[in-house]
Length: 118
Image 1 (tube, rainbow, N blue to C red):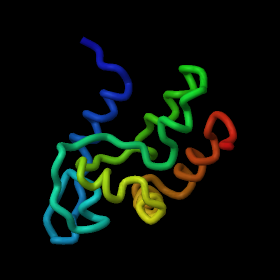
Image 2 (cartoon, rainbow, N blue to C red):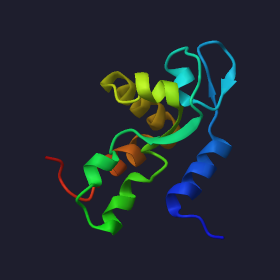
Image 3 (cartoon, rainbow, N blue to C red):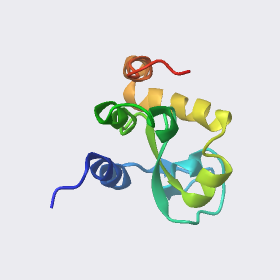
């Protein structure tokens, strides 16, 4: 059975992303590298720079733009609720993604959003 692209990306990221937390241990929740916390609520793929709210009224093909490895993080439910929507986390995550993918790839992804944000 073929998974939808979002679920495929989530499985890939769950399989490959690990971070060294503030406690020195390796974690699947990328938020552990941002701040020490107790993980709870399971692991989820979350959009960081462009969210579902940004693409809500776009054509279906453009909505898929948010399902990209540069835009998505793996976070526990607790981190996502407490810090996942903060500007400080987005700025930190952009720095992390630039280290992973390079400045050019991140700049290109951010600049090529299908429509201008209001």
